[in-house]
Amino acid sequence: MQPKDAEGGRGLHLVHACADAVGVSVLRELGASKGGKLLWAECRCGGLT
Image (cartoon, rainbow, N blue to C red):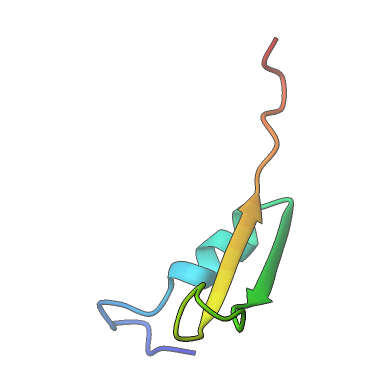
């Protein structure tokens, strides 16, 4: 965890706190990329019609 006065490092903590679901996929397919991770978040819109 970052110090309270840090200017960065809270992004994923905020996403995790606000999202209904989060996940990660490892990118290893040939030609897709040189590797890495794909992070995703799902947020439901409550009360909207």
